[in-house]
Each structure stands twice: as structure tokens, then as C-alpha cells.
Image (tube, rainbow, N blue to C red; front, side):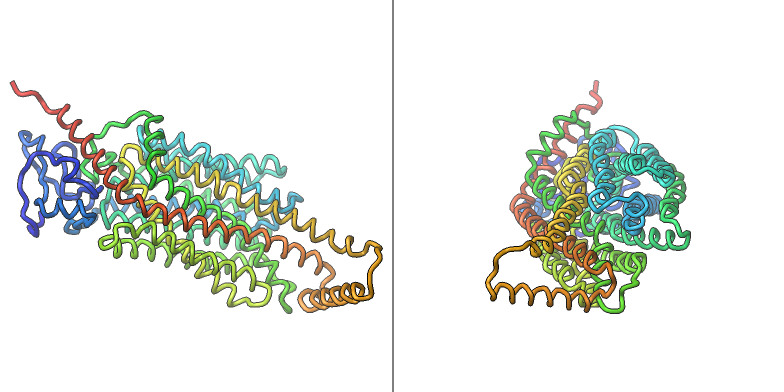
Length: 564
């Protein structure tokens, strides 16, 4: 036990004494074991002290009231904790590999099933819809039953359905199995972050969450790379879907070996009893920090879903318009896009976490402000990439890298905000609720929406030449103006794409470009939501700590043996 501050045995602290410190890493109950919690100190108090805790001095309590959380002395992470986090990160990696494998071979899938952009986007939408619909169910189960076995069953399910889907030759059946994959992934994504929250506290929790969430962009990038290269080597896109199921079998075995910590153990509140599902939902809806950060994260999901699904295809169309790129292959573009996504994630997620840890001590509202800054920086960068892709290859890839880096700053921070403004016993429900909202209004619809808008715009652009060719009375100036526009359009086609299919390629490119501009507006809207979150995050964090400690104290008193 650190001797930096004077400490003494006192009665259980009131709610005010615990305000604004959700970790309460210097406090723990004598009941239950905290051996698997990093940042906590086993007190080993005798039974007569069951209603007492070791708390810091009044100075530290006042610091917490001001929002200045004094960090506990760092404790070494056990091998069991490292193993658990490693397994969770590995499963999250292959989770997102599987999710974006199809994006790397999307044109081959469309060609095989003879579908357009709208039905191509529907593949991802069907997956996300089932994912978000079943997330609340697994969130409810994750707060009450064995999280280890729920995750193992879920990973086994999505591995099996992914493999079976690769053998479907009718689009309807293939779409059905992609939807079933979402059910399996819902079981894992709602539960895994809560295990990390029950193992670690304070800055150590933020670091571990950064490790967990950086697997999202890295896994997505590997999905493009593994999908496109496997399809190229096997000369069949279906083999791209048969890689992650093999890794899924390994993941199931590893999940069965991890330990499932007690809920709330890291905060010393593992005696909390879960409330009813509807009570959880009502409290979450009243939590303004949670709801506003969920709205901001929904915008992140919308943008990430649209760009991840259509990015390689759009870049491929744009680069083919440059002289000398007429024979460019999609798998080459997917490989580069995957590498950019990976490195942007490797740098962006830890960058957001580091900024959060550095600034949170001085500026308690820094977490949502960092998220807002990331979105507002990403918007002009990705818009610039969309505008320059047909003329500037290297600058386009550079803008995409920095745009994704800024976007990736959000992942770990949003998860951290959820964990410290929500009670431990409803965190899985909160994760599920956030997944439901963010995907329902975010990436569940964005791939299909962008594809459908592009199809509508493509039809409009394709009809324009017919409209111009209709006979009508025109003045001489109008005739000259129309002739000039026709010559300019012809020269543009000759300059960029001398192939016979040049006009259709240009129309497809412009239609997808206009539809992707919708993501810019959504990013700005997300930044506004996160700035609004900053107005409430301190108050809601204190309320969560207060409710958690009061409930834990009541439970300890109720369980205290009555002396004769």
C-alpha cells in the first residue's frame, strides 16, 4: 500500500466521498477477492471490519469532488490478465477481419450474383441489422450469466455460418447466412469490453481498452488484404470467407481458458445486485452523457461503415480514370486500402487513448472534446480524398490515412466514457443499447443508403445525354454552348479512359462520389453531439459513482452477520 498519502480506517464512505472516481482503486471491500484486478490492493481485513474500508484522507476526497482523480500507485498486471486481454484482442481482430472480407472482393461478389450497388450494400446491412437486433438480448444475458460461455457460443456460431455461407450459390441464401453471422458477433461485442472493465481501473483500463479497440481498424484492414489476396490466389472469391472460420475454432478454445471476473470487482463494488432490464433501459435513457455519446458514436459508425464498404470500390473507379491505370485490379487497391486502414488504426486508437489520459487530469471534459475534434478533422480530409482520387494518387492515399487516423481516435474513448458513466451491473446492457442505436442509425443503413443513392444518381446521369439530344428550338448561342460542352466532355473521356466503357465508368464514379459526400455532413453532426456530451459528462460520472457505492454499501450491510 502506497504511503504517499496518510490513510486511516474509517466507516464506509458516503456517496460524496466517492464522487468522480469510478475506479475507487484505493477502496475495496473485505468481502470478495480482488486478486485479478489491476490497480486494486487486497486489504486482508478481519471479519470484524466487514463494514469498513481503507479510504484516503479528506484532501483526496476533496480532490475527487473537484474532478481531479488522484491516480493510485501502479501495480503489475498478472499473467492471467494479460492472457485474457490477449484472447479478447485476438477475437476482436478476427471478428472485424470476417466483417470486412467481402468488401475486399465486392466487385467479384456482385459479378457472381449479378447484383448492383444497392444489393451489394444490402449484404452489409443485413449483417448489421441482425447484429444490432440481437445485441440487447446478449447484453441482458451478459449482465446475468457466464460471459465466457456466451462468447464461446457466439464465436462458434459466426465461424460456422461464415463457412456455410461461402458455399451458397443463390443470393437469397448467401444474404441469409451473412445475417446469421451478425447474431454470433453480437454475443461477443457486447460482453468483451465489460470483462476488461472488471479487470482494470483508471489509466490501466484506458490502455487495455485501447489495445482492444485498435483491433477494429487493424482487423478491418486485414479483412481487405486477406480477402483480396486469398481470392486472387485461389481464383475464387469464396475462399476468402474460409480463412476466419479456421481462426474462429482457435478462438473458441482460447475463450474457454480465460477467467470471468466478478462484475464490478475492479471498483470494489462486486456485491452489486443487477436490476431489471426495463429499469436498466430507463436509467440509460436518462443518462445524458451516455445518450449523447451514443449519438456521436452513431455518426462514427455511419461514416466508418460507408467508407469501409465502398472505399476500395470508389478508389478503384477513380484511379482507373488516370492515364495508365486502365488495367488496375481491385485486389491491388484493396491491399493498399487495407494497409492504410491498419496503420491508421495502429496510430489513431492509441493516440486517442494517450491524449485522454494526459488531458483528463487537467480537463475532466477532455474525452468527448477529443472525440469531437477527431470527427471535425476527419471530415475535410476524407472529402478532399474523394475530390482528388481521379487525379492525385499519392495525395489521395495520404488524406485517407490522416482522415482515418482522426476518426479512429474515438473508439477507445467512447468505450471508456460508457464504462465510467454507467453502473457495473448494467454495462453489458449499455454496450448492447449503444450497439443497437449506433448500428440501427449508423452502419446498418449507410452501405445500402450510399449504394442506393449512387444507383439513383447513376440513372439520372445516364439519362442526361438523352435529354440533351431531344429536338428543340435553340438560339445560336445555345447551340454553340451545347457544342462546347459536348466537345469538353469528349476530350475528358479521351484523356482519362480511352476504353469503350469509359462513359459508364465515369458515371459510376461520379454517382458514388456524390453519394459518399453524405458522410461529411454526418461527421460534422457527430462532432456536435460529442461537444454536447462534454456539458454533462462530469455530472453523470459522479452520479454513477455515487449510485454504485451506495448500492454496494447497502448490500454489505444487508449481508453483515448479526452479532449475538
